[in-house]
Amino acid sequence: MTPEEVPLYGLCVQTGAIVVSAIGVCLSIAWNVRIARRRATLDLLINEQTHETPLSERTEFLKTKSAGDIAKWASPANESLPQAVTLRAVLNRYELVAIGISEGTIDRRLYKRWCRSTLVHDWQSVKPFVTQLRTNTRVWSVFCEFEALARRWATKAEKPHM
Image 1 (cartoon, rainbow, N blue to C red):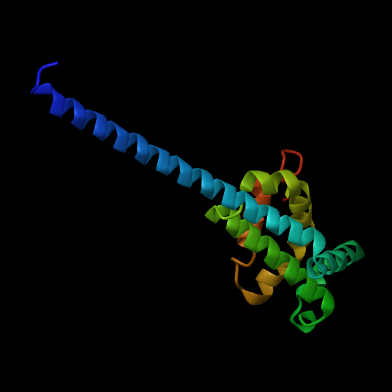
Image 2 (tube, one colour):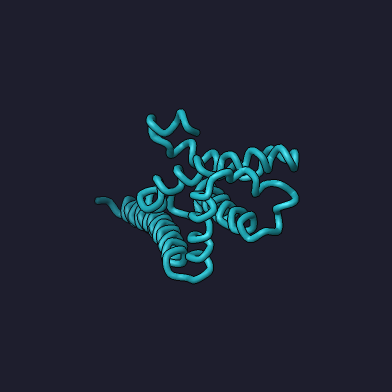
């Protein structure tokens, strides 16, 4: 190595160290974002399974769903009744989850593994309510994120019922 090559060699080593450090920082940030997304998803799922409000709303939702004729709760005359309020609360939660998944703040893979079949079956059950609500309000985008997610996650056997 000649004396003229020494400064060039040092510059190359320094540049290489900076590039490797930058790559390491980028990978670290990406990994931390992934962990934060998973943690937020786990917090959401734990909240749905342990806190009184989501649990009682889910119980009431299941009662309303099994009673049949779910579309009647979309009527303006029924909008303040507990069944209609519960339906909208559960649908709002699903809509928020769907938006969180599309925006990347909720981990799609984790939520899907935990809740896919429930989400799809709930959409199938509330579709008459949402259709009637859209007709009554003439707002065709009501709960459209939830619908799109349920359609995306439906299996071949479930798709005809969507």
